[in-house]
Image (cartoon, rainbow, N blue to C red; front, top):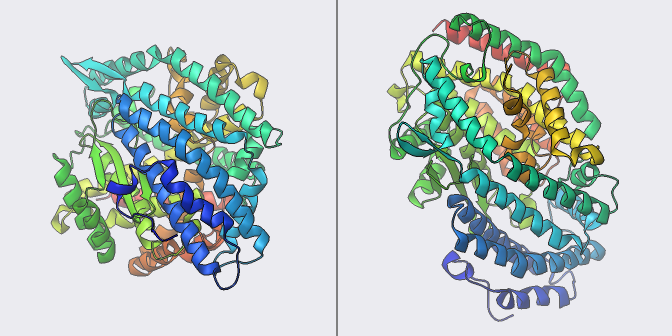
Length: 567
């Protein structure tokens, strides 16, 4: 074609299908040869980047303001009017490449991904996959609308988090119960949403010829290096090794608090009677000090983050109507990341921004790769990018070096972070095991009451140090509060696997910080051109989920906690 694709979001975000379709039609009609192959691949890549960025920007808008009907309508119109027909033609282009027998350099992994995507593609699933995205959006709407009146002011639930750190136990309990009361008010809405999503997932799997959704989702997530049975083995390793470690941490907390048992509102308060860390007062301060930390980790990473600040690629403050959680999204055509968070002035906000920054650095480091299809990185390693960054940045929290804390408070923040990581594995096992049960027990999991029962059973199995007596409904509905179950099913074990990888990167950094950062960046720069085990190896780690590796990691963390407690 004589015209070229626009690269300015102000232009292409207003495009309709009739403007995009000619570019795709030409790709379909062009006969492939050794002469035109490289240009054809680049043209396909650029169209894919453009559609990906349109999708990302529209979805980001829905999370920034969940109550805005016009934004939701625009997003849904894109899904139906552009994304669905694009997926259909994109499938033709994948088949065209596969049948040509040609491949670009560093394309073995993307080609394998395409073969699997072609294998599970079904035209009749396109509308269902769009419906899935819309239902996930509805979940965000429900959660984003949850507010309470606290001390005379209507606030989002996230703004109660500082209260959970109060030394006043009765105040903590009051806030916790108020939050749960509001969440339970939406119990039926979320149950109904689950039934719709669950039926949709099973139909998608059936259409693609799979016996259950787990089998389909494994292929869709391009999981080639481990199996569902490996996940179950990981759960057993967690029960064997991580649950006792969690029990040790919580027993120490209970003793220091002088309590007969740990109730849910006792899990975040400082056990030594100190008030919550208050690392920043403004979002600008948060950004500035995190920038200083990144510059200490690696000057180039600091430059990346400063670019994001300058170009308004951050939205960090919590506010009413904003979707829950935090994420980093990719703008693939302009090759920029975007970070979303819900900061309320706590150390968890610092940790979250540093975590999401790791994802952002992945986007910058892989930007040199020519083809869109080389950017598809398994989350098992993508989460190493973020979780390892939390650990690599941890030595630079001191205010004297541009960070947030005194030496004592920095040690406290690091202890809290390490303990959170150790406590995370049992919780991860609950979330992952719940989904394995749900999608291999179709008849049972269609009834939300059975989901409540299974979640409670898993909670008692793995979360052994917490006392939820008299809080049966609050405990049993915990699955409703885990957005991954509703928005990105089966995406959670990656955090547990990646945490093991991140700790290995950190182990290397304790001996050679500079060398560990260099290896980390080298692995990020590979993008999706290498399989997961190779990415781990390049970063200086081993892809593993066995009890021995888990035990070595936990011992390493406990040793550091003991060392930091002496500070």
